[in-house]
Image 1 (tube, rainbow, N blue to C red):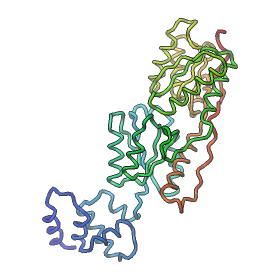
Image 2: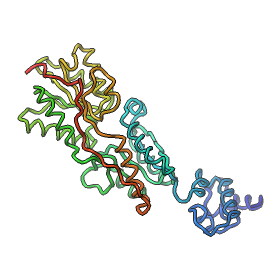
Image 3: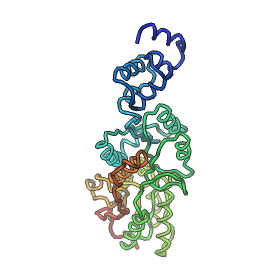
Image 4: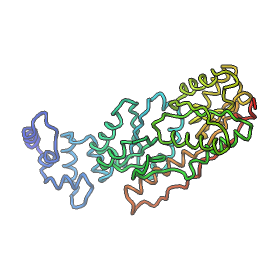
Length: 360
């Protein structure tokens, strides 16, 4: 590779043009097919030729990761996750950290890494992130969370030809690989029945955003279980999974006259439930004497608050493992030897934040 080759390549493509595979081939003094073989890790290329191609690609900055991709083969050995939430919300919600730990537990032994993008809630931010990941070949596939009603991501990823695994229940019959435990309704049913057995009749539910599939699913199970037990529909409040949202919802529920307040509240996650207990105590309402509280997820913090949190447990760590295992099966079905771990249905974990109803 000579200085003359470098200058000729630069003249041909112009100072502002983006370098191409042909530029790399010209600079390295090889054919375009030879560059392609190097990039895709194919045989039939000598070590000196491979080295010239890599040096040419680096000099032209043909791709930020071209050297790594060429050395490792056609795979990037990275799986992507795009979080359409604010960084503040993610920082205070252990749900994602436990899920990510399970994913990493499965990826690490295979020498894969997780590329996490936190893009916030700006319209179009997630779509732009997925397009960048695909166009720049930064990941081999993506793991999706929180399926939405009319979710546009599935069609987008099909267009981008980016393999995807969804954690949760897909919207309607979307043809996407999904990871979920069977019997998803079991946890909410058990929680409602537990409260009714304790004498509660005024039971409220504080959900996540209304555009999430699991929000609609759990709310329907909540309402159906109350109806099956002959009880009136409970009070429903939509929130955003955050501690601040839970505090606002709790203040709203407890602002009603005493005889109209709920005696028990089921929350969409543990973070909300713990924040609600603190808000209730500040308002002079004791848990569980005056108000029973149930969370969802069974995160470690539930064991360390007072009173200890009654919650609906799901093994997020194993869910993360299962999602990564399914991704490997998508990427290379013939070599995927790891079977996704079995996932048990959500189940009620009774602790100290639930007790007998404070009024008939």
